[in-house]
Image (cartoon, rainbow, N blue to C red; front, side):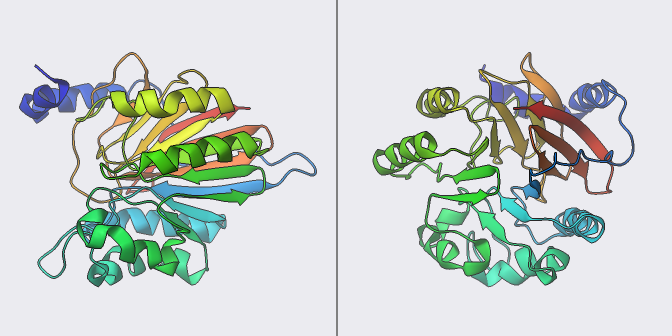
Length: 299
């Protein structure tokens, strides 16, 4: 039986126990610890990231409120949106900008008011409306195209279209060239779909074959994705940590840790990334503001 079928069949009472045990695996403070400051001459970069958020519901608003709370006490440099930016409702369709007020402007109003830049990728729901062209053209999403890069200080973000109709014959050579040419100390790749995952969809063998060799060759330290509606951070796999941030507001799905998992929870949440010199601090924060995960990566 495939992993997806098994997770669909398991009762939540069983999964709840597994998730509760994961929650007790490492005691965590109730709030993120003070993040390291950059060494003299090095720039600190403060980033928030979320995915599978575009429901416009109270869960998304709760996550957005906690993101706004972080902005108020420690200004954010940019926000990464990992796709499924607009889910269908009775008033608009999947990926339809008719839902932008409820799924973007209201939940993230504090960040938008502070003029924090956003940078998005397309998820599978987003391409169901005009193949996502309207979202690519929507300036507040900060998309330079269906795939593009963003450099901020010591960090380069490579934003991908991982959908089934993505033209990899063009995108993959671009990614290889962009990674090879980048002298950024930190390299982060963002796509909607998981590569390694302990969630409902599991590992994506095609993406593993297509992308992981490039990550190892060019020193990508972090891959961020959604699609799995949960939070998961892997141990480093050939030098890359895989971070699932699909708890942005859509209905949750189960996740059961495997041998590669460092932390996994099915909860509404988002990620906080703090780059400071040779250190990256990753904090997972839930919709109540509780710290659910913290780790440091060294370059």
